[in-house]
Length: 181
Image 1 (tube, rainbow, N blue to C red):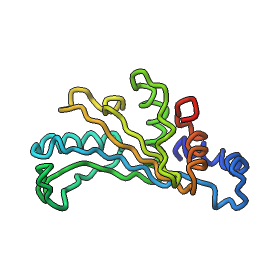
Image 2 (cartoon, helix red, strand yellow):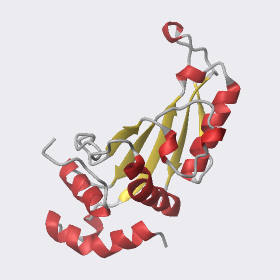
Image 3 (tube, one colour):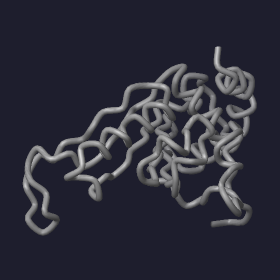
Image 4 (cartoon, rainbow, N blue to C red):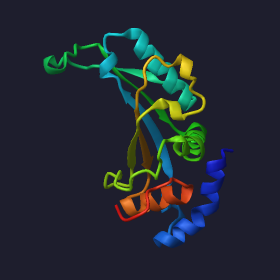
C-alpha cells in the first residue's frame, strides 16, 4: 500500500473529530489527481507534443493522452483535430504514489519555495495549482527535455467545502504558505 494512503487511514479519526463529522463515510478523501499541460506553443510540432506526453507519462507513472481541439478557433490559429495539450488522470495507488512524490520530493526542489498558495480552492473542496517547470521531478532527465514547460495539477476531493478540503490536504502534508491567504 502507498505510504500516503497509510497516513490517510491513520489520520481519518483525527480529521473526523476536527471537522465534527458523525458519519465515517462523510470523511473527505482524495478522489483523483489530474495533471494537464496546455501545449498551444507546440501545436504544429508533433515531436514536441510527443516529448511532452512522454515527460508527463514519466512523472505520473501512467500513460498520458494528447488532447485534440474539438473545433477551429481562428483567433488562436487552431484547427479542428490539432493537438492542444496533454493530460492524465490518476486514481487509486498511482494517485497516492504521485501525491507522495509531489509533496515529499518535487515541491521542496522548487527554487525559493515557500509553500503552495492557499487560495487555489474552487469552492467545492478541490485544489488547483500550477508548476513552472517539469524538471523539479527527479525522474525527468534534463537531456530528454526538448522544451521546459509547466503543468496544472488538480486534486479532486470528496469534501463539500474548502475548509474540509484544506484540512484534508494539510493533514496529508501539502506544504501551504503561512498566513491567511
